[in-house]
Amino acid sequence: MNKTINRLKYIFIGIFLLASASVLAYHAMWVWPKDRCEKSGGAWAGKWMKCATVYPIETWTRRPRGTPPLNGESADAPTADAPAKAAPAPAAAPAAAAPEKK
Figure (cartoon, rainbow, N blue to C red):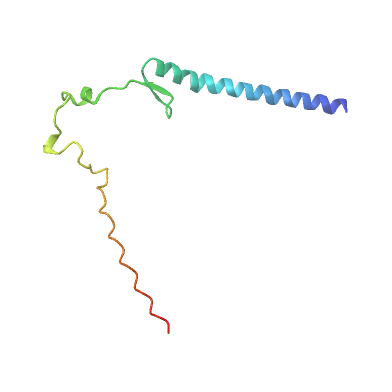
């Protein structure tokens, strides 16, 4: 009986240590870097686990803010990626009346 209790004690201590190490590794590799990144004003890219700097689009296009869209398009025009709004479905025709029973 004493051997079984000692074996179970070591198993549970091992499981506890493994779980504790897993939580610590998760925080050290994911949570704490993400918090540091967000506190410094960056954007956390979780897929690559990197801290990125957010640039406004004007930096890349060198167009001043408030410039109208190119080619005379309206700012809210649908793009090739976004589907146009579908027309509403036509109203259903009333069902035919059932013949009268005699």
